Amino acid sequence: PYEFESAMCILCPRRYDIPIRPDYKNPKLLAQFVSPHTGLVYKPHITGLCQSMQEELEIEVKRAQDLG
Image 1 (cartoon, one colour):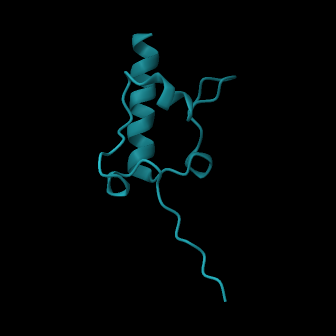
Image 2 (cartoon, rainbow, N blue to C red; image 1 turned 30 degrees about the vertical axis):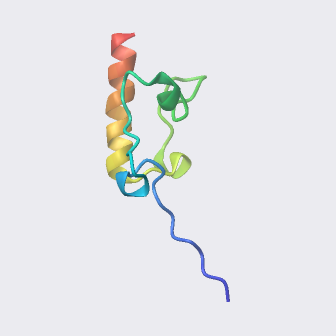
Image 3 (tube, rainbow, N blue to C red; image 1 turned 90 degrees about the vertical axis):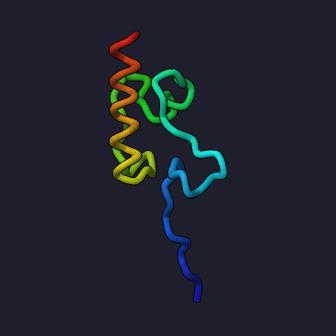
């Protein structure tokens, strides 16, 4: 009877006219995907990101942490 809506990555460029990209200079965006207690990036089943965006996010979080 009811069809489930297919899950879609919330950061994928095809979803927006102006794509939202994870960037080390945007700490408010990165903070949504990082645990405040451990400083580790949440896993993809929690963030809802696709594999490519998850990898890009992890790289940008690491860069932001390294640069302080």
